Amino acid sequence: MTIVKSSSHSSIYIKLEDDNEGINESQWIYELKSLLLKDQKESSLTSTTNQTSSTLIPQPHTKEFQRILSSILSKLSYFSDLNSITEYIQKNITSNPYLGMIKKLYYFKPIHTRNRVLIGLDHFDDLYCCFSGTEHLSDLFIDISCGFLEKIKFDGLSSPHHSLYSNISRMDWALSIVENLMIITQELKKNTLIFCGHSIGSTFANFSCLEAIKIKNKYQKQLKKLEKFNSNNNNNISTTDISSKMIPIHNISLKCFTFGSPSYLHISARNYLDQNSEIEDIFESFLNEFDIVPMMSHYPFIFIDFFYLLVSIMIFTFSILYRLLWSRDILTVQDITFSIIYPIGLIMIPLVFTQMIYYTYQLLFSSGLQYKNTKVYYHKEKKFIKQKSGREVEFEFRSIFNHLKKLYNLKNLLIVDHSIEQYIQNLLSFDHNDYNDNNDSNSNETLPLEFDTDNGYNTITANEMANTNQLNLKISIEIIKQLERISNRDIIFLPSNSIETIEKDHIMIKKKSILKRGLGILIGFYTIWVSISLPIFYQSLNILIV
Image 1 (cartoon, rainbow, N blue to C red):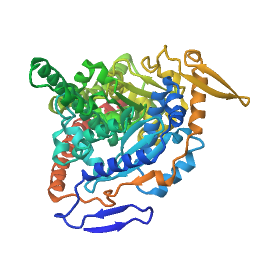
Image 2 (spheres, one colour):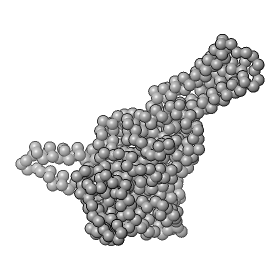
Image 3 (cartoon, one colour):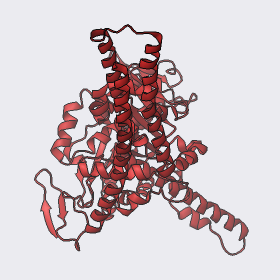
Image 4 (cartoon, rainbow, N blue to C red):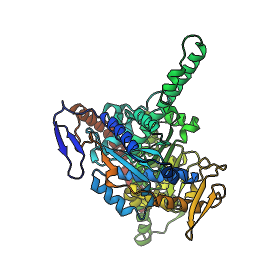
């Protein structure tokens, strides 16, 4: 084992040189707790600071700030060195004042994975746990294979289950820290524990938040058992002291904001969440209209549909040009019927076959779903629109007519719309009133708000500002601008943070097996479709031009 000191910052890394040597990857959570408690003692968290942030920020906007900050942290989670982080913050702080909400950042990357976790604190007493997305091609292929073959199951009683991810230890390390994070959140008296991430980082965040829900359910059941036991043993045994000493992590407020999340939720997990509205409200999934990742993870045969549309358009375009430019025959009604309608019927066969393949896939593996509380950014409307039932977005993923619009926006589809920068830009650009979240505000609040008008201060209440939401937002942003900016000393790479990624041999063998199976079956479906459909396309073209 070698101690390596990074030149970019003062953190100490431990480099694994032998498979038999290593560090306990769960150790970092205790390092984090120690640093957080130390910072808590050293920092002067006065009542003035709290009033400037959590008290004076209008309640209707706190959730919106959490959304935006979650997207920003999702971007920052991709950085692996101090210079990149500080450069990004300094470059964007003027155009994006929400960066001023960040108070502390703690980075950690396990040695066995390329994904990082970023623990962030804001000035409003929230704690964020953010996971980075896919950065390496091999991770992309393994996630495609795992998501294709299996979906995330959850019943509220046990941990979220995905056997393939468990076999390769893809998500286990993230689940193992959740209870400790909840305890830390409670001990530091934070308002909310927020999980977030972009791309596959969203899947990490979803896994972790589902685990937190399971832990809350477990604690609530334990307390109920203690209360029942206490009521039945009034003589000698009392559990009042025991229950009072339990850390009340079941009372922690949870949120999960995801951006460009793959559609990896199993129907059973979706049904459980739909039946528990309080739990469902914890999750908010943000998708851009032409983000290919949520589409393909739900409907893996989307490129078959694209190929079908392009070939069909080419065949009919060529046949029309042929009739107009080269054919001198006078067409009868019978010719039109045979030469146009019949080929259209032939060309419909590959489309029907695609649906058969999709239903076969559903029977064998099931199709992945999004959360009910999904908001899609539509470029034409320039705003996020909440889906009424959650099924609309999945229908759009498969709609052949919607595919035409996707092909027209090919650059957004393949490059732009999945980038975390695009999500941040869309969140910042649209009118926050369009969220229309009924549970975000309290009409009975009378929180005092102060704002500067011509060097004088006026005091108004939240009730008086109910109909002036834009003014409310501007005031909140001005408050954020006055907060203390994050500095280099507030960005900490934990001592157990690993520079390199080293995987064990048996994990690599399992990954190769999953890749062969997942990509093999997917390629097999595509090959079968092409081998059946190409002769049909060829026959249709012959009929049209003869």
